[in-house]
Amino acid sequence: MNSTSKNIFLFVAALVIVGVVFATINVNPTKRVDISTIIQDVQNGTIKSITVNGASIKATLNNGTKVDSTKESTESLSTVLKNYGVDAKKMRNIKVDVTEGTGWNYWLGVILPNVLPLLLIFALIWFFLRQMQGQNNKAMMFGQSGAREIQKDAKDKVTFNDVAGVATAKEELTEIVEFLKNPNKFTALGAKIPKGVLLMGSPGTGKTLLARAVAGEANVPFFHISGSEFVEMFVGVGASRVRDLFAKAKKSAPCIIFIDEIDAVGRQRGSGLGGSHDEREQTLNQILVEMDGFEPNNGVIVMAATNRPDVLDPALLRPGRFDRRVVLDPPDINDREQILKIHAKNKPLAKDVSIRILAERTPGFTGADLMNLMNEGAILAARKNIKEIPMHLLLESIEKVLLGPERRSHVMNEDERKVTAYHETGHALVAHLLPHADPIQKVSIISRGRAAGYTLKMPTEDRLMRSKSDYIDDIAVMLGGYAAEQEIFHDITTGASSDMQQATQLARNMVTQWGMSDKLGPRTYGQHGDMIFLGREIHENRDYSDNKAVVIDEEIDKLISDGLITAKKLITNHRDAMDRVADKLLVQETLERREFTDTIGLPPANPKNLMQPNT
Image 1 (cartoon, rainbow, N blue to C red):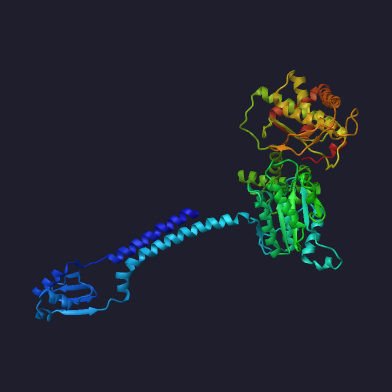
Image 2: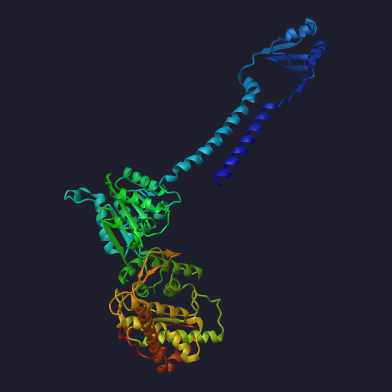
């Protein structure tokens, strides 16, 4: 029940209660008569007793009937009877009882019926004034910070033990924890506590989780807020919220302020974003002043997270504001193994599950991806009514995270299945026979996501750098499906559209960004600006001539053409092996690594691929 419904319910209930009270007060079991009837009964001698209470007369007849009447409050009963000419002898046989108009009967009978309506009116006025006051308070609180506080004694605290894989980042942040726990250790040597820590990394690498772990380890209050919560349509509101946030934090010092997605307010000033609306810049200016201005800011550490450090204002990144920048990279194989173990703690795994193999099959996965992987495996096991999570469901979860769920309802006709089988076999065959391509882990013609089929290949080890030869082979593998359709069916379908887009983008990056063109040399071409619309860049500073643009197109065309020639040559020379793999795919729809290797009957061009585990 919301607030409005609750207030209406209480109001109706109050009216019902008042009505019941009035009904109770006004209930009169006696018969109401006028004073002349009472006088006539006295003269007839039919009245047994009379009770006088102020102006009220209650009479009891000889037969037990009770009647009520009213006289003037200034006249006594004897005076009224005398004025009506009643003989005094008639009153001698009647019991007369005169009472004072005091006590509860007086209040309930006389004053309360008159006062209660007034009280009800005043109560309604007070109720509506309170509601209006509440709205005014909300309006006055518009400029206050909406930061949520996690107390230092919270039960669901996160510590560094709950964060795996980011050893370097944890080492950097451990000093922040030491500062908060034992500041004298550092101040004795003249060291000052860092004012700001910026966590930088791609989405899902654990920036927010690491900030919570710092608060849990340091055992101090933790204020967290999103950068977008500062920005409003009214100029000055964001700056007011920043002032209020730091005022609250100073009262709780030592403490931590965590601003998630700080690029929402920390973008570089003067970039032209926002037009005449400068609320974001006003908010940024206030953050700069609060972090390092005239007033001291002792004991308050500002932590912020962003996956776009390149767009932040230089004044925000200078020493004295964000003194430390902690980079969170995607986890390597050992880190992925530790992360998977953390997310597998509360999950019953089958005996055949190997966390190490899962870590090997998930290069490029972030911590969030690995958590999603384990969760999807548990969901699949629950769907199949299995008490333990087996290895094959976790491997299926990897594909679900990468490509999406299986679309068994997407039924292809025989021609489409055959084209898809040869298309995926083309990718797999070219990757298997090129020395710098990643080894094939799985080939399938079962639809997942938007793909009619897929070829899953994984690197043998984590790599931070890749060579030109690697990318040349990658382009050939991407075009393997296109080449297979041309060579086998002498036609092409729309199934290769995504492959062509990826190959074209990779070739463009090789030529314009990575200096991998012999003709153009070691320089970059084109500077992307900060003009973004609907999440895409709409501006590029073209720093090259039209003649260079022609050479860029020629070099891109050459890389793609050479890749297509390589793919066609491999497919033509090994047509028998390709037919064997495609025929088997049409029968069982999916081939794992060992099945693919046995079916193709050709040794891999890269000897390292032979050392891959049988998964």
